[in-house]
Image (cartoon, rainbow, N blue to C red; front, top):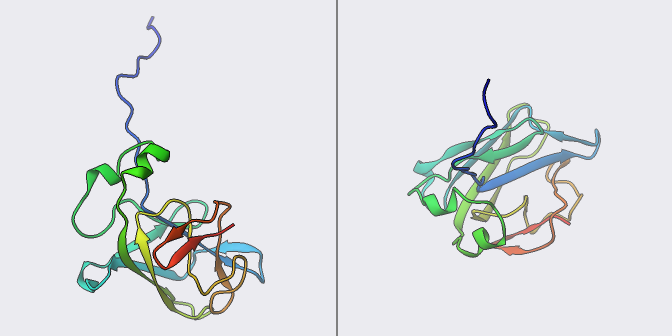
Length: 148
């Protein structure tokens, strides 16, 4: 017979980028065929790929470039975000199937919530119909904002 489990330590990891693309025609998040690359501004040789998770949000577990552990591990609460120092990164999106126009945007990362480029109205089309959306409150972040 064993007793109740004792948690000695809990470690939480914060994803520095989450971006979801929305197709207004199908009213669904899209990921199939999209290639999302991220690199520090001015350093394209440090390019890495964001991968879609189970709800078709492209995520990065770690930013390319020098590792800043304090910005990777934490509760993701207000206190965590006060000590984060966002830096400019380039995000390139290409649709290998050709259904959507490719585009590039600059975002300051890490970013709390889903990023939306300034030229996209929340819920409107990016290129061939993809949008970036989330229900997070609006907040300035480099050239991007959060969706409402």
